Structure formats: structure tokens, C-alpha cells
Length: 151
Image 1 (cartoon, helix red, strand yellow):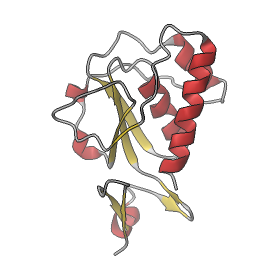
Image 2 (image 1 turned 90 degrees about the horizontal axis):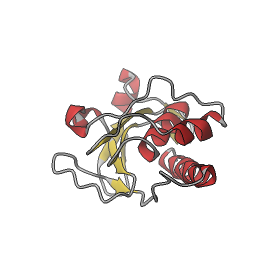
Image 3 (image 1 turned 45 degrees about the vertical axis):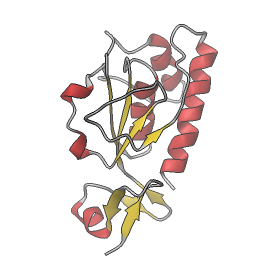
């Protein structure tokens, strides 16, 4: 059995889980089930959810204090790449079953989730209230980190 682990040693998948279909793999790319968490779940984590799903990952996002709706600029900059965020909405971490994910990533907002074992903190600044270019920069940083996650 082949096993894959993330950088902190958390078990990601095995060859048997690939054959079951929960996680798909192709040469050079590993698809994982990933949860992105932050405070408001209106911007960074929502963009990460959509971008990860577009790459083939099973993804979701949630916040410790979710806002009312996804930020319009977040939707716009993801749509610039031809990726839809339709159907996405802010969710509470209390409504998420973390056992369904291989990796849990904090977006860098100092999220402390006693019930969630955070695997990585991406340390991204929150572009909320900033010009749209700040959203593009955040989107591009997320894309870069997702590329690292897939290899």
C-alpha cells in the first residue's frame, strides 16, 4: 500500500483510497479533500474553495464567525479566471464535519479552532475593504499555494 503524507506528517491518502474513489490521482498530481477556514468565510477561504474545486480537489470552506454573503470582489476575481462560485455561501465551522477532510488550512487570520486540527496556516492578508487589485493578489497567492498542494 502506498501512503501519502502532508508536510506535518498527517496522513493524506493511500493507494486503496484512490481505488475507492474518495481521492483521485493522476501522474504527478494528488487530489485531496481540503477544508479552508478563516474568520468571516466571505473572501479568502471562499476563493480557495472555488479554486481548489476547479483543480479537482474536494473542497469546502467555513468561518469561526461567518459573514452574511460572499464578497462581491472575491466572486469577480475568481470569475475573471472563468471559475464560478455559484452556490457558495458563508458557513460556520460548527456546521462542518472535519473528519471528512485530509487537510485543514487556515487562511492566516489567527483562527483558533479548538475542534479543528489545523494542518497549515497560509498567512494571507484579508483583502476585505481593499481595492479589487488586493483581491487579485490574494487570489494569485491562493493559486500558487494550491499548486504546491497538488504536487
